[in-house]
Image (tube, rainbow, N blue to C red; front, side, top):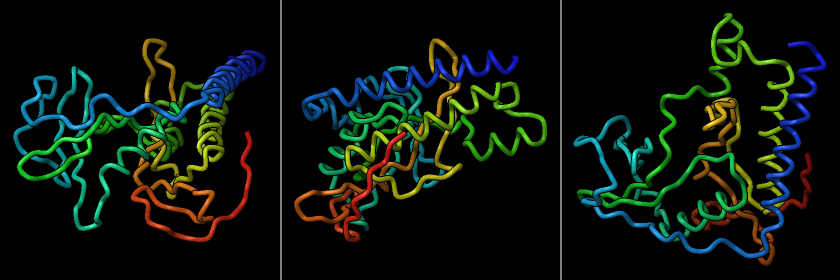
Length: 223
């Protein structure tokens, strides 16, 4: 692909992201409660492994979508209603984030039902593979690579304008996936459970479990 074609692809991707951002910002009301939050262990839509795998997680499918059920650790006093509400707010605010489907209680343990990204590559892995001449970034034009970077920045800016801050953002927490049906490579931000919510009244950052952290810093982020 020549430079002019790459620039054209970049402009189209930026326009797509900007249109999505504008649609999200035009929403006038907070998100409605998730219609299905707590899934019963015997819910026929859930098909799970019989035994937990790495870190106690359960893999399976939810209506043919690959999911992983990750334990909600009681030792950290996770406030489940606020955990759900904050994930709901994040998904309402931005599209390129890991999908949260709800919760499940099984054998006395509480799980968060999350989009399974275990078969996908992180940005760091993909860049490392590209340097050795392989991987999913190898055949991307410069325009498409810049578009990926723009989309990550745009997603962060949208979250920041909604006063949602991610504690951990790196090449290991950005996962690259193929969107359907276009098969375009898109970034997905993960580890959202570490998000910080900024409260205007108290003037402090609060984590996803509503615990105060540090004093608020007034800063505006734009793409």
